[in-house]
Image 1 (cartoon, rainbow, N blue to C red):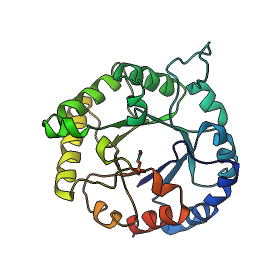
Image 2: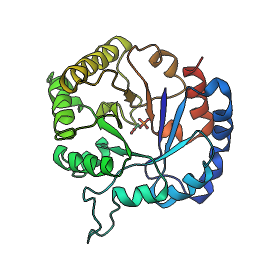
Image 3: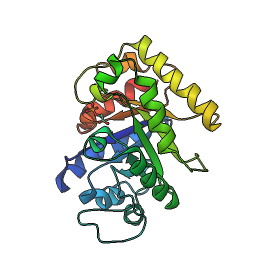
Image 4: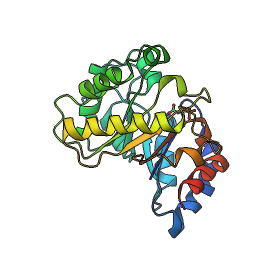
Length: 245
Ligand code: PGA
């Protein structure tokens, strides 16, 4: 079970100590099955890496530049630089970055450059509300996955994260029946199209300690991508505890 903590543009040097309780939780045999990955902002990536050294927690970045080489890209950070911090994961295709210009093609370049640095990629995709209303959900997702994975030969390091855009940060989550159906359709598609036997598919969008009991019932899910609820260790732990029993 994956628990990816996406801290977005929050967190500073002081917040590092707030994860102590999660580090302790991860030591318990009972929570061996929990794969916890913190994705803090770039500015504190290496601090998180050092803090979690010799623990079972991994660290990831929230994005990267598409050029795998160094270059004149003001304000950007590439996969090589992320790798150098000791981080092992990177979130790509998050809707907040798609909104500010990441196209499927750019995400594909980012994905390939991350894989070439041996990073694990969490590929996010999902439909907007208007697309769902027009019954275009699957069409949109299919395109995001297809172009995102174009010319990729090895899928071993890819984790899929279904995040309906309208669900992120809104408190709104699909009912279990519809969400399970959606995940099943995505899974079947990935299995068939990319011949990945057991794709790791996560759900993200307003996951919190209240709805986790119900979300955990959904078959085919291998974990969660958690935004705001992951910034408070108490809530994050609550989610992990309720998921692993
Ligand atoms: P949220 O964010 O849990 O705050 O909805 C999820 C995400 O953006 O990955």
